[in-house]
Image (tube, rainbow, N blue to C red):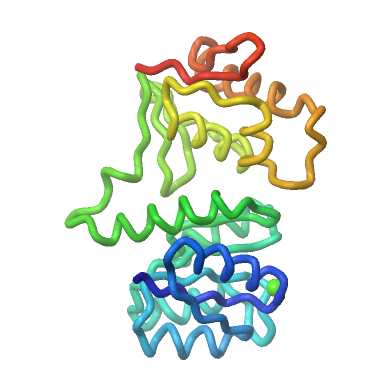
Length: 223
Ligand code: CA
């Protein structure tokens, strides 16, 4: 049973994560400070760490730096309210394996945890980090898209939406499903935000990539 270390000082959030992970068959340990996170991670016995950036004592980025500096290879997913490109870049440069911004859906977190655990069990890694349909690729590690030979920048929400489509090629996804999985709990179901973002993806990744299925939702063209 994979053992997940949760470094998070807000009990409401760590409780939410722990509850979900336990019901998905994981074991969990919660720590609330940067120093505890460092000492437990170094002590070993964990398969992955979820690391909040705003921890008391030390910044989560400093935790990451210290662990990587000591050669600790534990997969780390950063969890933060800072939806900020600079922080994201700093996190990846500091050796984080993935990055998730609050508020988030639990499904989003579990997909990322499973992906990171899977990478670790692959002999060479790499191949599972790229999702491809037609000439469009999503690189899950750098969170960038590539159309043909052209790299395309996708802001966080657009990337998550694209990832949802690429994980379900050929499948119709309803607006409600997309709203729920990508935007989370605080959105009005009557909102047209999904349509607006599908428009952004079409503009950036190709106008025929995502089809409208009248009265049902959207579908990623399969190959
Ligand atoms: Ca915090």
